[in-house]
Length: 113
Length: 116
Image (cartoon, rainbow over all chains, first blue to last red; front, top):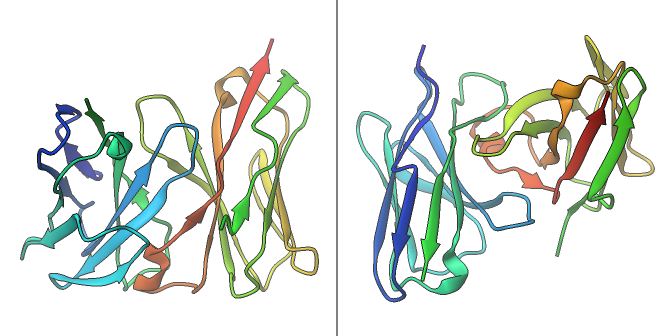
């Protein structure tokens, strides 16, 4: 049973560029949440997708956007990258049908230079 | 504003002893609490949880205690093992179950080191 998978593992971008990160949820899960973990911090909620729509959003600017596909996989897009966007981006999946905890992927390490 | 706080960035414990990790929260609407463990280069792994209707939950060597009046929870690991060395995150949610569980508020984590 595959868990949450994320790609790529590492990414280096330049300020001003755009980036797309990808996530496939755990089998049986249909809800995907994205978190940003900056160095020395806990994960911060970016947004959550369910039924291909953004259902909740944290305190992140509009430069952060996402998408969920019919197969429940998801993308996180960040435009006009800033140095401060350098972080570990974590994807987590869950399902409204269960009360279990979030399952996280191993993350994508984004470095903005 | 940090709604979940872990005030100890690090904890060092000898193997076989008890490890106690603490967490405080400010939002009284939180009613579901979780502990995650994180190794370098991996995502957080769920460890144990507790809902606000309980004050204790136990799973093997891990026990979580919740004191709602003090808005405080703690994770006890007994006995501690070197493989427990990791960063431990406390997290809280405002709704038990359902898709709203997707929004978790995390503390900054505590680095636990268990030495032989």
